[in-house]
Amino acid sequence: MAAAALEPVLLRWRHRCPEGLIDETGKIRNVFRRASGVGDTVGQLIEELNRIPEAVPELEAVLDARLKLEERAGEKVEVPVNDARLLATTSLNSNGFQLLRHRSRVTDWDDDDQLRSVYSDETCGVVKEITGATHAFCSNHLRRQSEPRVGGNGSLARLMSVSRGPLNYPHNDFTESYGEGILNTVGSGGVPHTQTFGLTDAMLEAGVSEQELRDSRMLIVNTWRPVNKEPVQRFPLAIADRKTIPRTSLRSTLIGNVPSGQPRGGIEIYNASYDPQHKWYYYPAMTRDEVLIWKGYDSAEVPARPNLHAAFDDPGTPVDAAERKSIEVRVLCLLPIT
Image (cartoon, rainbow, N blue to C red; front, top):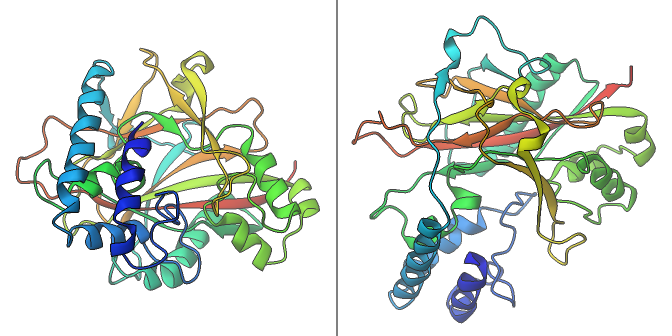
């Protein structure tokens, strides 16, 4: 519904923006893709449209309509979110998540080149060490930033909250079908059979074959790091212990089409309905020297045993707390089948 209302507006102002940002249907190009030579198209478009006074009222009208729909969609459920720092231990295989201390060599978190050249290698190395993987491949990085209710980067930035802002609904990025989508994408030489987040680009460049994937256990580890100068307070990330998530509370949802005419395929994810059995945790006051990792997909687990994650609005957040900025990278690991 939101895309259907936004795309005609973007199409109307396409001619006023640099070529390559908006396609002929009104969709923003490369929303999730950060391949070589491809920058943050959403960020560029937000900056460009904010310079066009005539476009701003149209975007504000779309945003207002979406907010009204969200208000009618149903009441939010308040749940306790526990302090994970009080837990004795957590691990990928038991709880599905853990916190790592890691100081990055990145000096500018807004520099895409540093994130590609420095942070990707660092993240692959950390995850490879934790998992014992023989190979590890990083996805394109995804930068997220919350927006104030007034001001900030404008109405388009708030409309693009799914791709740019904190996601406040419980979900897991993958279902059991993801592995087959990766296999088919590699087997076809890169034609997307699922949203790959750049993972298959990295594997094809390294010469990984479809057969090598079939002979390996595929494990995808999500990584999340706040990059605020001060410890993050606004919209921290909560994660549910996967031992507390019954499969009856999960529902698969297809996002996009498979295959797709875009430079990415669709993807099936797990959303979740409220269940009192879910037990949620977060790490208060995370710093940029900490990274939260969790298991997103594991070909060795059928049916899947996913955890869930979501940003949440902490009622104790100080009014003057900085907007949350974070970096996400997914790492696909190859391990021997045991």
